[in-house]
Image (tube, rainbow, N blue to C red):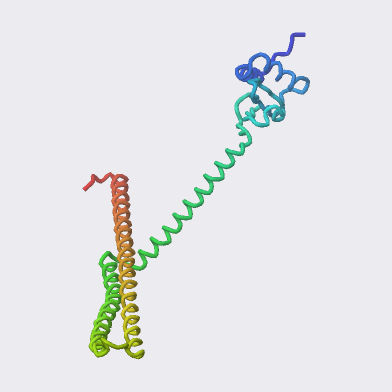
Amino acid sequence: MAPELPSPSRCARLALLALLGGPALVAQVHGATAGGGLPGQMFVCTDRAGHTHADRYPPAECRDRDVRELNPDGSLKRVIPAPLTREQRKKRDEEEEARLREEEQERAQLHKDRALLETYGSVDEIDSARRRDLSARQLLIDRANQRIAQYGRERKRLEDEAEFYQHREMPPELKERFENNKALVQQQEKTLADTKLEMQKINERYDADKQRYQELEEMARKAAEERDRTEREREGTPPQ
């Protein structure tokens, strides 16, 4: 009886394995498949020493290496990646954290953009809101300056009264009035400084809102132009 010839799929598979690992691997595959026909799957890998292994299950010699799973016809089904090292896991986790932070920032920016567009209908509305906020703070500044001027006049009267005590001790009551006057001036000066800082922050906030609003308007304009261009191309209309 003539010897049984291997099937075409078996030939293709053996050819691939020979290409991967040479005659020694082909013999190994023959051993793995002998007596039971072709198995449903085969795992092939190369260990750290450069030796190629093939088995019906992922070879134990390649537990830290990539393993190729082959289809019955010898074609590549998938590659099972090697387990990550500690450094690789750390890098993966860091990259994942960075990705999650970026996604959170994008969601936050989207929320801010939506709120900005819902609050203002134009750049002029942003400028109007800025003027209203600054006007309220300017009233505080004007009031503080008026009080400082008032306390200055009161101090002049106290100094005139103190001239009578140039050669003797000033009465405790007069000293206390000087101290109270000084404290009132310091309080209004603090109000001035705080309000001016708040106005600076208001301007910075409105500057940022205005810039972002203009960026969103430009994005919307470009998107509309792109839609019009696509629509004209679809209809065959020449660009205007």
